[in-house]
Length: 189
Image 1 (spheres, helix red, strand yellow):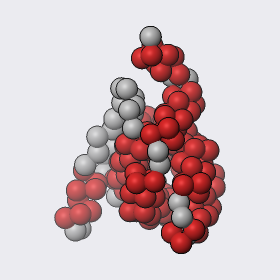
Image 2: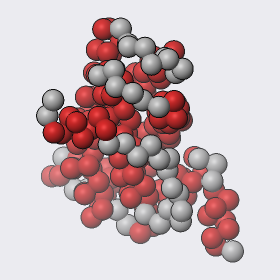
Image 3: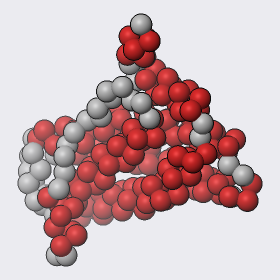
């Protein structure tokens, strides 16, 4: 087992999103990416038949069932359209976004299957079947490749191209999507 694999198998924060003032929605998206990596690390631990606490499994379920769909909406409804509007044609961001949107469709449908596997094994520490391990591993590996593309290309370009007004719109929609839009109202009072 490599040092990287050992670190990935043992290093998870298990935290949920800290909205705070959500001043920069791109930072929040980056935080979601970190949580997704943590879920992938926990999936690796499940596949390796290493202990994963019940609370960690619950966190994975919350992420897969609730937070991931919200995150994908953040990108599909707000981030990607704004980037298509702000980026120059020669940046060819539309090709990258097309690939990411395709990935999102698969991630959303696969996440429910992965959640079902975890839920079925929520109280046990039994070993997953070989086919379940393949499915879990495939999901985690695909998610990591997807995150590399978003972290290396999308977020850096978004940080340079999106305006303050764009970020305010994203922030408002993200809070609303999570039923936290009253936080925004309280901040302006």
